[in-house]
Image (cartoon, rainbow, N blue to C red; front, side, top):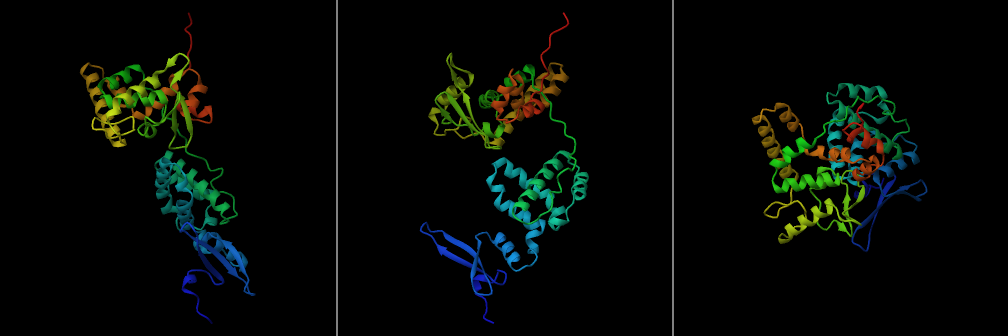
Length: 349
């Protein structure tokens, strides 16, 4: 028997790899199956899919490594996660780190709803378990698309752990207490977060050139949702327009286009924001304690920068406007998770 070409030694019998250089300098790779007559049947350019087609043509079982959860996780990391937002990528990788010890060595067809429920019950972090099962469900759906299983998604119908949305609301007293102890950079960050209703990660990367006419442009890192937030109306410049203009004018002597920068012209990082926030909050807490108000100090201690987004959502009268500003496609999310004050009612008399 003629020895196999070294180029194809990693492939199943009867499969060959073809390569062709392209004009742009990249190399095209394709896989083919040679039947008994020597005819080459194209299998595509994805090795995993090519191996599955080879198994069908050879009337053999799917290669075991492709149907083990470890291989499916690896493919999901390679092909799916990079297409998601930066924050979602980070979350997915952390969730996979939890899932792998339990499921890596399991064949996909061996996983049942009972297996998923057992994982849910064993996790002490109940909310995180819900996110991990949601990711696992998407991975199963992708595996079905890839032809790695024909079974129903075992995550479907599995009960999730009960979640209680965070309901902290920073009223004017708490806001003013922290705002009063904040430096100029943190005050601007708080104002930007409140007026735009955006997540902290999106606030710290806002730039002076994120403007187009009367609008401030936002692309949410988590969802990719694009927003145009009004900075001017027929009546003139609004609060956001005034804030962006003032920050831009102040920063003109620095080359950085980021709105939130320190006195040296360096843009605000997540760590810098956290440090400034913690210091201002601690000072506000101490001030409240010095004034003999431990209840206010406790409220201040619970105030997190991420609570500014729901504060904005809660203080916009029209829930439709609040939902639009937050970039939600469904008002239910805004109402259930981000509206943290009750309905406005009139007294008896």
